Length: 315
Image (cartoon, rainbow, N blue to C red; front, side, top):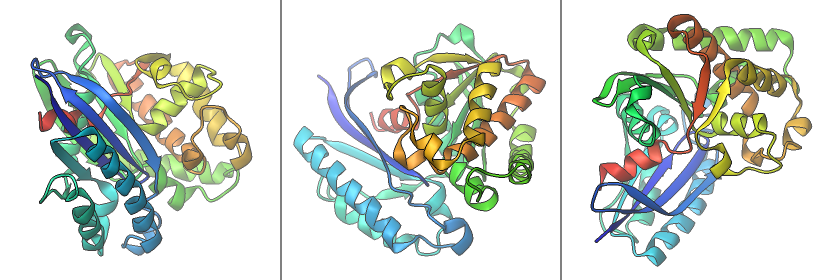
């Protein structure tokens, strides 16, 4: 008999829900999967606190998610909060809100801040679950709004992980104010990304990796654009393989576009329009480093990520 669980991942840019049945063999069967852009980390890099309107946007989404959980008769729930809440001085306002909402499903349930290391390990578990072990060792990159996790591992599990303090929202707010950004701004963004990722590559031995797996919205959006999809299609995107030349071509295109040009792309979620260029800069730096250090020649994009890892952690 299966057990129905819910996983919520609340990041800097989006809040996502997975309701799934855990089968007797430990695998997951999706019941419902959803993502909303709430920009919880709006301005937190500059102010050090969560904006009240950002908390309210997140509350509205979580209220709807809880209603879905109740309707689906979820028995267990785990909600994790990542970069934006780790950095915020008023994070208790967020946690009080989450506690009140989640308590409508499971009394006593509340959101938890996880470390960058645990975030990386959960992402790895979700990302490589469908890939043959012979394709390992793997380097999994979870490029979020406020942080980027690098994880190295194989069929035996995670061997090294590091959470770098950079993501598509953070780099956009700090380095890319132009519409489109100027060449000088793009250069500064690349230097910022390289500097913030330096310690990650020093701590994670990617030179032993055979396969690069990318997860989260920047990577999946890039894949959808590379596939020239008229609208976003998660089934088409899942496990797409892009050569690094294909990847760089899409990234360069996104970085050079203005807001309206990005918004007109069929697979583009409206909430990613302003930050996808920053994500593309980080992706290019990652591609360059992984090519140089590990001889990586392609990216595998997975729709399964930390959400699946969270659900499995309570299975």
